[in-house]
Length: 424
View 1: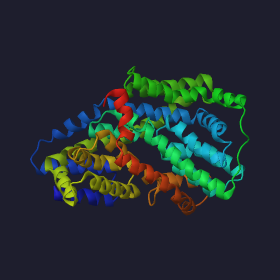
View 2 (view 1 turned 180 degrees about the vertical axis):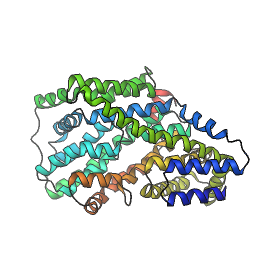
View 3 (view 1 turned 120 degrees about the vertical axis):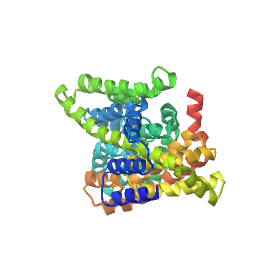
View 4 (view 1 turned 30 degrees about the vertical axis):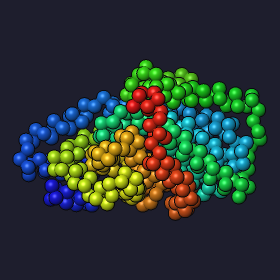
């Protein structure tokens, strides 16, 4: 297995696509250990034949439709009506808007690129520093994959064989805590810099903003209540949500036409094809690692530092944060989850808690260099340099780290809702 791992690492360094490198390395392991080559199609087909994985294309389609149907503007206006009266109100609205949008797109990049363009423009026109506007936009975008729906959680559920519904519910409270923590820092900045606030809204103003965004807000409500009540599974919820988003986009908001649907579907197929290729080869690679005993050896190595679960959690968090700085989150999951998930279970960590931890850590990587895809998107939207966005965003990592610590060491934050709703 050592030779296989070396070849795989070399391929990664040479820029080989991750799914290709995973497939070649796994196939090489099978050949060198005299397994039947039929193992390759059997494993990858079984990986693709996954009911939870069917949720991915529908959640991707939902996000694409929502981004093209005027939902973002309506959500931001409603968020502004709710919290704009506070000092630094548009900064608070930025965070609250991201929390609403997280219940629809499940993507940090979609949040930063779609909702972010509206938020940054509004804040800039109201007298906010553009660096501050970009920092709030980038940091709050991290909430996207934590509050359901979440493509990274779909991938984790498939790789680790964990309840997708449990993971979705487990991300709700951490997502709310992230938003609250970011708003605390926004309030500190707003007071220090004397940022403006909007007039206190009348009931009529709030009601109007709510009515305009009602159908958009119903999307996460339908998802949550449908899953919580058992009316449909998370996978079925994805289908319902995608269909619902198309209906409101075409017939209620009417900001795109039926002619635009093929383009959105093609975008969805393109994105999902990459995800599916990664999942199939990652499952094959995970099988090869398990046969070679790598997870067990890794577990013994990590536990050799300390058998204490608290120390293990600390080590894993530092490791995942470092990985997130250099690798795209979903790709990192493909490689690491088959190794780390069994170790976490072996020391008694709740599988839902650990799943939220993994996704949280890797999503923080979207706002840290050198990869920091959300930083690049935000810099482009704001029209400023990557370095300026990075410098402005750095203080906003502190509240995110505080919530990460709470999620890591206080299991009820992630397990309370799944236990209450699903008995998990």
